[in-house]
Amino acid sequence: MSIGDVHPGWHAAESALAKHPEYVLKLWLQQGRDDKRATALAAQAKEMGIPIEMVSRSALEKHSRVHQGVIAWLKSQTLPAETELFDLLDKLDHPPFLLVLDGIQDPHNLGACLRTADAAGVDAVIIPKHHAVGLTPAVRKVACGAAEALPIFQVTNLARTLEHFKKRDIWISGLALSDEAVSIYDAPWQGAVAIVMGSEDTGLRPITIKQCDRLVIIPMLGRVQSLNVSVATGIVLYTAVQQRQ
Image (cartoon, rainbow, N blue to C red; front, side, top):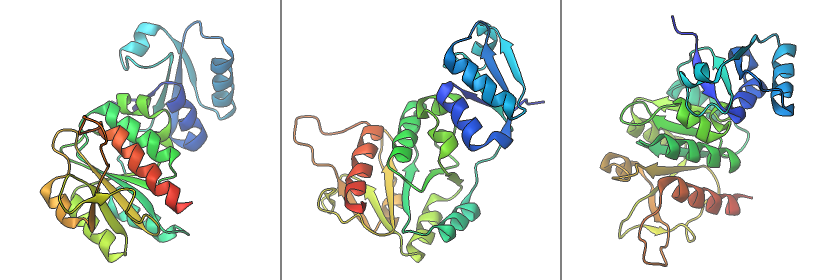
């Protein structure tokens, strides 16, 4: 029987205790860790009634090679889907600011995108259920707690979800090379917005592009003509944030 989902690393464990202590089954700390950070986390877990186990480094490494000496075990959960996403949108008291990731394959890229999305104040991140990386331990580690803090929704049919966004008057902007694309600096970002980023190798899928209200590009002023998707995501998000403040 599974003992739960692995949330390795300090940021992930601290965020899990802060945001979702009701889901935390137990906390593993590496034997010999008696520093201030470990002591504080252990005290917090004890106060919440969460079991703490001191385990060897090798035991931690059996479940994650990026544990940093701590793993929080959470109840196995399925990411919420469309219904819960629409419930969240209905409850917002401001125009939604959404990030849609169309087929990110690399865990480090997804984790970095989640971390930036949380920092930029994104209301929710939407990822497809198929042909994309999920919330693996590596993703959670790179996200530094954002995977536990952000509302993340996993949808079966991304094109259908984007169509529902249109019905809610959410303006869909996809980053893609196209003669019709406008600079991110010339595009309006106020109001209800969903920013759509494509996969590392192929970018946005044609079916996703069809659902976009506009395509945007990041002006490239040097010889390099492409950026890592997590870097590009950060640039677009903070360009939007600058207008939305």
